[in-house]
Image (tube, one colour):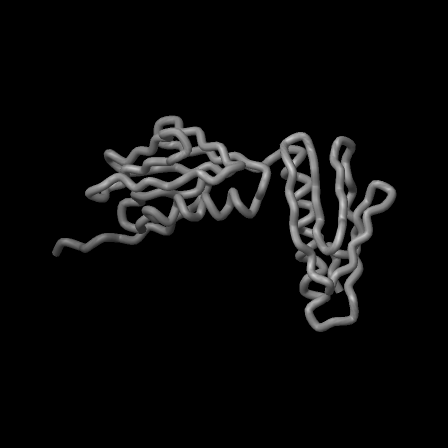
Length: 176
């Protein structure tokens, strides 16, 4: 039994939630998000709450809490939004935004260009890249793609990391 799935999801003022033919739509001040809900979970929108109930299938217990968390994230995204902060560390490593493209110079012989998806805004200040958006899935995937360009290495700590991420440092060669 899901503990998160049992709790009804509250709908704040200014947010409109509709569920039609297995498609959940959440509209708020920051934007609109949609998600397809499998038939294993029954969704009811009534009285300022979204209630989820599992059907009698094998996948329903696993999906129950997952969809409850997705709906909470959708509501939080259209009201407050989400932010991911990446830090670039290394001599000569830098990032810049050109239109809707993020250009990273991180030690390769060429700059790496990543297209910024719609719904995500990127702000670069010195060696800090701030990503904001209302879709948590899209934002997290883009942040992971940026980090994947140059993962932090354990010897000198150079690379792109999330803010607050701890990298376990290794000791280099020992001179005898």
